[in-house]
Length: 162
Image: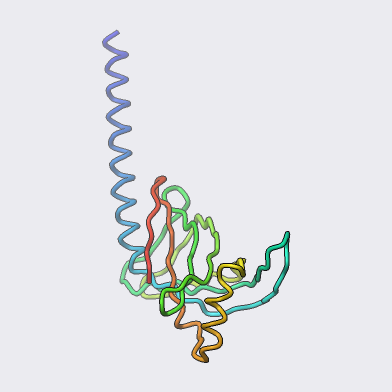
């Protein structure tokens, strides 16, 4: 009986240590990811549609993930998932978002990684006014788009806005 209790105690101890290590790794990844800069670098394949009474626009975008730090950012799906990226104009007006569920992202130190052809669908009822205002202002450019990344680490969502 005491042997079984000892095994259970050892198992609980190992489990507690593992949870603590995962929490430390999660905090480290969030801290590192806050330094990552996400810049849209290309719009492609723009298409307007009318589906089920809802106007929408679809296109693909390339995103440049820049790591300005001297530390390699490396995350695989065991701990971190990049859930989505939300796009805003320079005045913080919502433009749209893309669901990624990316489970692997590696960016070398002081370098960049481009993720290509990320599909985006915009519900034009909610974003058309903002998008047209930006385009009609005459000063639209990709470098003025702000991003908010939503990452999931061990079931907890974190947002980093740039």
